[in-house]
Structure formats: structure tokens, C-alpha cells
Length: 312
Image 1 (cartoon, rainbow, N blue to C red):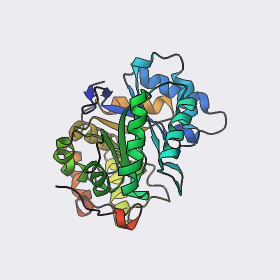
Image 2: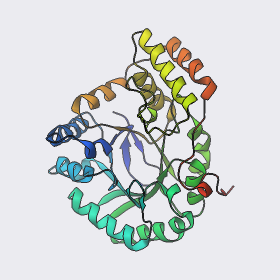
Image 3: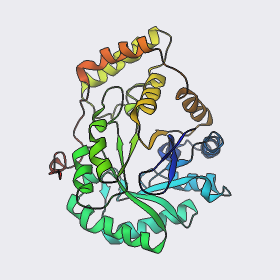
Image 4: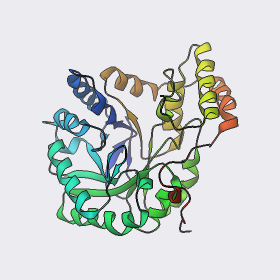
């Protein structure tokens, strides 16, 4: 597993990261499977683990899995600001308390990275002037190593980064076979010393045999084209998810690409997929299929946060 520097933080992360959200959705009695998935990830060289209070009891499960593991063997990231589907609080008091709660659930005295979660649902001015300063204050005490922001609309992330020192961003569904808009922001974020982390390279299930969940926010024409790409791969004895994951990791050049997992076999499969070559003819056929919806996305968060002013 290759490792890459996480911007200017001094941290190194594995090119494939462990998205821990599925650990919070395990069925009754399935906790051990999730713990085994974390152990498998570590064994295969995955060193970057990303979680959030929003992901149910994922922090607790991840903390159990990492208990007894040498702390320097992994980079641990969590988030603040989002606590439910419509529960957001980016106030300084709440995010400070949130960090303490996460430390307890994860069973650690130090978080390598703490991120403002889905900032497009909050007041961006508050994130700039209150949330990030609160996290920087915690950084000075030694409990936080780096500070980041996450979200979907790229202008919202850029608006924050252009006005406050931010070490990392996580963007999801913005560098996939269908949508590569994140790449256009590479130099902009690099000039500000902000590392880019790509999440959901399978577009929240749309680029998998399982298909998009019923709640997927993408317009129907995007989902239809993704389903056609799935069928195209299936007809050739291939799985679109493998093509999509390999593409994102091999061509993105991001510090890490996060993929959700809660099963050891899923982890082994994903690690294998990023090393296997992809049929270039098939890749071209998939790209042609998705071309009519290339770089299309959808709104997320407050209307005013879709296209806020971005510093040059």
C-alpha cells in the first residue's frame, strides 16, 4: 500500500483510506465483523481511518477495533458540526465538547485530524470565524493535530479555505468516473497548502452492481447512465465498481481515497482492486457511456452555499 504526505501536516496516509461510516450501520451482532474489517485494513497497509459522530456508533466500534494497536501505526480523523440528518451546530462550545466526546468514544488522547462536517449546511462565516478558531485552540493543547473541512459543493469548501487556514478538505462524489470536477481545483487548494482527500469514488453506490440507494440525490439521467455503465461492464464479465475504484486511485493523485467498509472481505477486495490492471477498451467504453452526464452534480446544503464568493 502506497503512502502519501497529507499536505503540510507532517502526516503520511495510505492511498486507500478506511471510511468508517458503515461501522455505524452494522446489524445486531455484527460488531465483531466490523472490528475484523479494521484489523484486516491495518494488516493490508491501510493507515488512514475517517469517522464522525454523525455515523451512529461508528466511533465506538472503531475505538474498540483500534484498542491495543500502536498509536503511531495509524492516522485517525473525525469530524464536528454534524450530529444528525438535520442536526448541525458549528458553534465553538459545541465543537469543543464534540472533540472531547469523540476522544472518549475512540479511546484515544489525540486526534490526528478534526474536520468541520458538511459545512454547506451551516453558516460559512461561522465556520471561518468561530469553528476553525475553536479547533485551532484545541490544536494548541495538543489534542488535535490538523484541522480540515468536508462537504459536497466545491465552492463552499473553497470559500472557507480562502478565508481561514485549513489543512485538509474531504470532497465526496466529486472525483469519479462520472464527475471529475475536484481535479479542476487541485492547483487552487495546493497554493493554499490544503491537502485534498477524495471520498465516495463509487458515487454513493451509483457506480456499483447494487446501484444507487433510493435516497441518492443525483438527477435521474445521471443515475440512468450509471446503471447503463453497470450493465455494460456486467455484459463483459467485469464489475463497474472495480473499474471505478481503480480509476479514482490511479488517476486522482489525492492524498488518499476513502472507501467505506465494514466487512473484512470488502477490505481485501478493495485493496486487490486498486492493484489490478483495468481493460483500457472497457474503460473507454464506460467513459463514452457516461460522457453525456460528465461532471454533472446536484445541489447540497443551503442555497446560498452552492456558489459563494471564492477568493482568487
